Image (cartoon, rainbow, N blue to C red; front, side, top):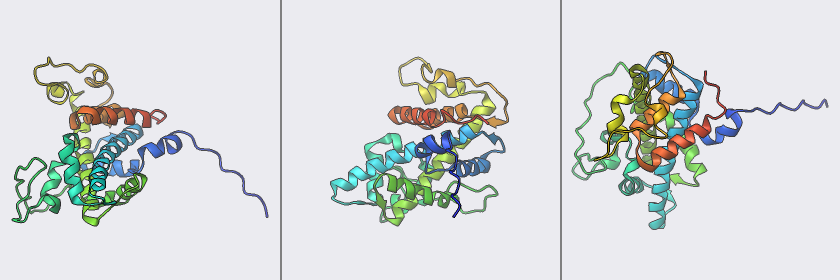
Length: 255
C-alpha cells in the first residue's frame, strides 16, 4: 500500500489561535454581521469578534459553575445564570434577551431584567431583518463546545439562554463596530463608554489607539471590533476581552 504523503502543517489562526477563538467560527460571526450591515468584515475582525464573544460567555459560565458548585450540582440551571449575573454585573450584556427568556419570568408572568426592572413584553410582528433572538439557535453547537471545554453541562433552558446571550451580544457588537466605521472612531462615546464619574474624559492606554480610526468606510476591521467591545463592556472583562482578541488575531491576515 502506497504511503499517504504527510499533510503540511498549517500555521496562523487556523492552528495556534483556533483554540483561543473557538467555538464561534468566523463564518458564523460574518453571518451575524451581514444581518446588521452590508459592510465588508475583514478576517481579523471576524476572529476578534469571535474571541470577544467567547471571553464573555466563558466568564458567564465560570460564574454559573461557581453557583452550581455551592449547591452541590454539576449541571448548570437558569438559577445559576441569574446568580452569575448577580455576582458580576460586568457579564450583564444581553438586556434584550430577557423579554424572550423564561429564566427572567416570575410566577405572575412578569418579566424582569437582572436588576429587577420590569421588561415590557416584546411586540409581535414580522421583521424584514433577522433579529438576534430569531438567530440564537445558530449558537447552540458553539455554546455546547464551550461548555465542554469548561467541563460543564447545562439543562436545555440554560443552554437556550446562553445561545440567546451570545447572539444578542454579538449582534450588538456588530452594530457598534459598524457605527465606529461610519463615525470614524468612538470619540463621541468616550465619556460614556470609557470614562468614570468625576474623572475628565480620557481614553488613555490601551484605548487611545481606538478613539480615532483610519481606512475606508466600507470595511469593518479588527480595531473597529475592539472599539465596539469598549462600548459594550466595562471593567475587568473589557480588559480581558481586548487582550484575548489581540492575542487571537496576532497572526491573522487583515483582509
